[in-house]
Image (tube, rainbow, N blue to C red; front, top):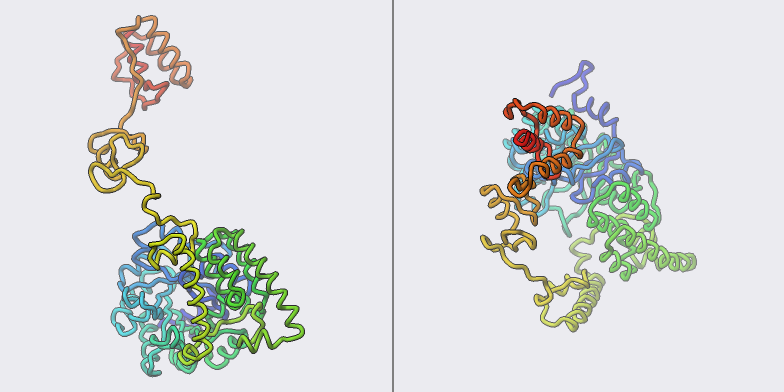
Length: 521
């Protein structure tokens, strides 16, 4: 670990100068920490933001994925781009593509989801220390920006500390420690253990961010004090209340409308917007389920705005009731604040999931879904349960094979042929045919050969030819007129000296015009 002249490590210098001593950090979240959300989080006090986790190998080979995923703006700094990877070369190539647009590259070693297990990345690499050391070292030695890591803890504090020091020795300049193990997820999430984070912080000479159990601003201050970390990262808390770092708890409809403003300014997929609205309004939509159904089927930002206006009207009725009976909207719903206020969602544990109240709730939800599916099934008998569920989400979706448009197949393969293709082929086969045979296809907009308007010399006299050519020349540039005029009055002109780039005038190339003049004068 290199140090500056005053004994400060490069990691601390990076944190202090480039990251501006950031303490409040918005976490990387797949499909949820897009540009619009980052800008909303910065508006409410986030001093550093991460991009969503990008898959390094896809990032390298798919230019469209890069363009759609890595969106930023000058105000979106400092910014760290996070990748998942399991190969040093792949990670380095992806990082080199992203480094001009960020302040550091982060390696995700904390994702505990099943998809990470199948893809062999995230927390499922934490036992392969040689591979991780090689990945971090290669990035540290070849990137122009620092490499950082986000990890989960081992059951053993000692092993967690050794793990952190290994990454530090490999070149990691900043470490984010999530105080949960790889197995703590879903209904077994439990509580993050900050003592592990404190042990890592005391053992390494690079900045440490603490992650886990951050739901209110008070949690932020308490975590900084108990762990000694340089910053605190919030994920779920930030999703349910983006104003967390300012210590505010706005109305859910106001916060949603504000996010929609950012989503209009920084466009993102509609699925991202829907996910954020569901998170912000989680408790409100649990009470007013009729609005939840409308949000689920919203097709535009205007639709989401209309949903929030409807939710606002419904909530205001309960706000008036709350003035006389506040317990109805807090203790009975088991919430610290009324449901119309932005607040964290606490995932129920295994014991709560199995209690009578939760079982009854799940039973009512499943019963309502079954009733809705039966109504749809009565109108369209024969649909599978899977198609009935899709029909509930998209009522206009067509599952009748007889009503679907039928396409003729390509004569060379089984793909549908182009409706306007001259050769009765799909686009791929048409492209191959036109390329090999030097043909054009108007239907697929493929042009391989030039077309020139033919001039029938046998059926027209010299005067007619001269008149037609003069008509064409009148549409050419002055330079071309001068050239053709010169060629017309020079009987000894050798056509081989007419080395001009082709310029088409009414279907005739410039050199064709010269030929007509020379041959007829």
